[in-house]
Image (cartoon, rainbow, N blue to C red; front, side, top):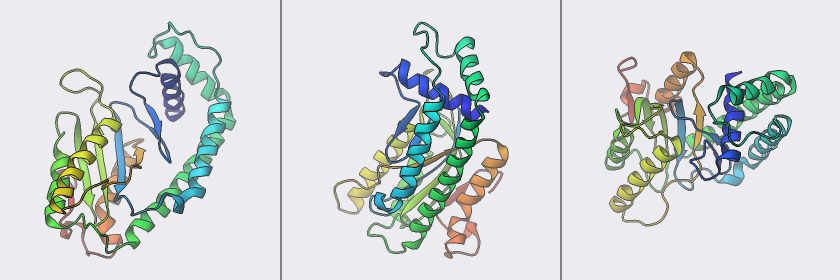
Length: 259
C-alpha cells in the first residue's frame, strides 16, 4: 500500500510542480526517487548492455505504468493544496485502496521488472573482457572514492561491488543534506558517475561517455529486502565464478554488519 501511495504522490509532484526537482523520471525505465529512501542501484559501462537487447521488457514496463496511471486518475486537484497535506495524502491513499485492479497491475509490473533485472544482470556477467576494466586497481580506487564521497553528508553506505563492467551499490539516502536541502537519487548518481567518468577517462587516455545513461534502481521496501540487496551485491563476484568468497574480491565493500 505504501508503494501505491508513493507512486501517486510522485505522479502528482510532477503534475503540480513541473519546474521543481522530479521525484519520478525515466530514460528507458521508469525511476522513482524520494529523499530518505534506501536504494539498490546498478549501472554499467556505456556499451555493456545494448538498450535494444531488453526492449521487450522495457515496452511491457512502460505499458503497465501507463495503465496504472490511467486507472489512478484522481480528478482535478486543488493547486493551492500543499503536496504534503493530509487532504492530498488521504485522496491518494483512498484512490489506491479502492481499485484492486491497480494492485494486480502493480504485481504484474513487479514480475516483469524482476525478469528485466535478471536478464540485465545475466548480460553484464556474461561479458568478461570489457574495453575498460573497472575492476583494474586504478579504476576501482576511483569508483570507491566516488561511492564514499557523500558518506555522512547525503547518504550512508551499506555495500557495493565493483565488477569489470558494472557497479552494484546499496545505500540509505538522507532526507536532507547539512544545508537543509532535499537529497535526490538522481543528483547523487549524476555526481558519482560524472566524477568517476572524468577520472577514469584521464587514466585510460580516452574521451566521451563512460557510463550508460540508464541506471537500474530499486527502492528498498524493508529490512528483509535491504538484507537480500546487500547479500546479492556482495555475492555478485561469487555467482559470476570469479572468487569462492565475496571477501576475496577486491572490489567489494560492506558496512560493519557484513564486514
